[in-house]
Length: 510
Image (cartoon, rainbow, N blue to C red; front, top):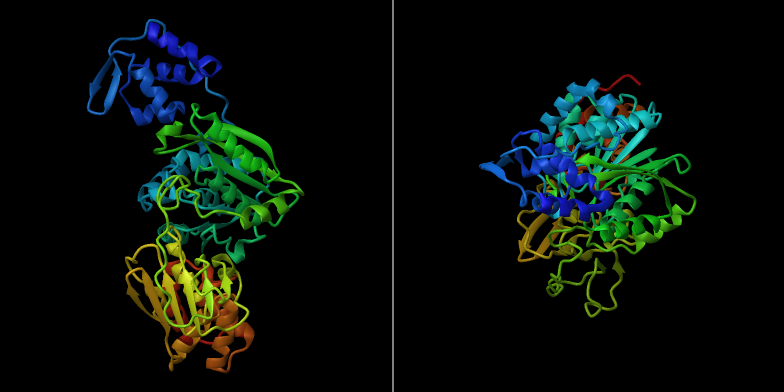
């Protein structure tokens, strides 16, 4: 008990956390370390330091006190702003538990850690309680937690868009939203390369649970701000957590937020709970951030000078010492070099950034292009190829590709040679279906529905613009207000069948 008293004394005014651990142990139940960390929002190191001083009975990975503490501490947790609303949503919590259990497993290279079902429902409850959501729009900047589904289920008057880099998550959210009849649309995005065109200036509110590095938080919040259409009343909700042992890291993150000239309207401590992340107590605070007139120039400066290293693990970790492999020799005579090529490689050849290449069509129509893709940005490969109409493209990757994107089979013949992918554009198709599909894919920066409509009219002839627009909407409701470059891979794969349906469907009444 003397050792425990010493630990509590050293904790000072932050002694609520270790006392919460002792209070939980005092009820005689069996515990796992993960459950104890999550319940008390106390870092794993702090919990383990307490457990080493206690007389525990163990069974596998579970433990409990052999005897009650002489004086069991009483723990009072801070007030939860929506805890009183949660009992009414037991059904939604159960639904979200099933959805989270069935979701694709997290990827450590993307810093994925799943939030609990109660957490995503409480996020939805807080949004509903604090803001007027009827007719509003919410942008989820990354959504491995499936917050989009919880909010859409609780708030039927709200439109939701998800922008994420993980194709598996986008496919899963789209599938479940369709099954449940929820108004959630999905967009592919690597936020280091830009926010999807259809998500810019679209939302009234944005929510994000980014990589917990200053670089990651700064980038995701800046992109969330870019997604706001209401610059006066819009808000960004941020989940961010740090161990009670590392306040300096939290300071770096808050400095990154301060650099964006955002107002901290509220910070709810330990609001978010996770199935993992025990180093930070399986918990994170929830920030409510409000932009100011000085936010927008700061956001522009932030995304202009960003680094590709934003994660805590993998090839794009902030602290990674791995250096990019040098690009192989460029073959052919590329007219444009896209990406970060060494200065000595074809020094007189025009260059373009990856983000610029995806943002707008190139000013000329080059016949050959060479693209360098750094480690961690491989998911952008299909979009980088679609963004050019060159006859030949050479793409240099950091590692040999594990697979070539099958969704591009209507546009390119693809081959791989080590780390290099060679793409040769296929000749124009001869069938009506092929011509419509190819026209849509070739106009990757344009809106899918508009290009598709014009292609249908040229092929079917008898259609008016209104009829062609209706055929597109019936064949692919997800194709409205989106470019090819934003479509998740599963939508690109569905495109050919949807085009076929639009060619054979009866002509609707004008």
